[in-house]
Length: 267
Length: 267
Image (cartoon, rainbow over all chains, first blue to last red; front, top):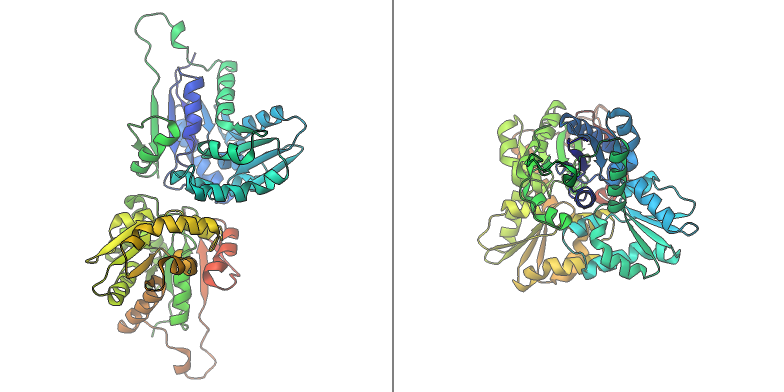
């Protein structure tokens, strides 16, 4: 039993879809979410820069005494996960492997499509016998504009998804934490035969398994003696840039209102 | 006469439209262009963060012994120009005032439309008796995707420009260095009665006037004694992130091939 928080980080807001899944799978766990809003996005930046930023955030989270770190950003996972795991005394879990494994389970012999940022796609982080990748750089700004089902978004998505539809993929991995907000549109364009894989759910499940295996889970509240001493879990949100935009847009990702966001004093 | 280079900076690639206009207006001047590609974009970030980044770049440019600094980024100009001018021993010229002045000249009694990033629009940097502003956050990613005349870009532009068309603006200031690449589309959507103001040309003209007034201009080559000793002007490009993307996309903004880009070692 370990009541220390789980650290979760992303280049900005998108990782809140992963945080939300973690809250659902692990309601007894406290978390600290770090969004690097001063340097967002990572998806169009170089491997070296993404690695440097990711390492800085890992060490910031470690100074907050987290018991595990979730890299809730596909680009950062694709470029930096190995290095973060080497540097960290606590387990580091990324979002790529859980999504890739779920896709492989969903269509053992079929073709898997992966959509992501330019960085994630260039990294080749999604290994599979038959995988077709497509960078979708306009999806993040469209989601941040709130145009989840706008005709322009449909036009953009039609163009990005055309090669995947032609290839007849059996499953589509949403390889960027922003993309789950486009699920209704993507499902409609891909058609009913294609399974959409949301890495957030798979990642949360991996986090739960890892904590349990290492004896790091916080005791679920119902197993505690009823002394009134068990604090409810807390969720901190910390960003590297001003918080107003994070508050407004973040609520869309989290599915609930964000009430307090701290500005990190770390640079 | 002063052969020191002019410093030009932007959050990334967009400022190359300003650099290009400066090369045309001042063919005898050497330049150093700094693109903050490791932290791009600035348009969605907070005033404090944009000011901090801009100050860091100013001081980097001053260490390169520039004789003047051009802030080739509307967001940075809107939030940081005053502060940069206070800190700088050399003249600092922004892109907002030259564009605003040109718009005021173009339609003295009419209504001016301004399109820009969320930051530029929120800053209220474009003062005029009658001005209508519109943030266009999707234009930068659409331009960087190279979709200058794509149906999706037209759909996005139609929606952003609708309030400006309804208001019957007489001039439209392209208040972001990326937007000149959308000129044909924007001109078509606004109609022939609306004057489009490209701040790059106006800014280059202001730079020329400022250098001349302060005696800082490099002698134009034809006035030099024909000793063979006059070096041709040089143009350096320096970025804070990996250069491959800058090389590819930068050529679209510069209108010519970029051959050498340096990675700054400054963080």
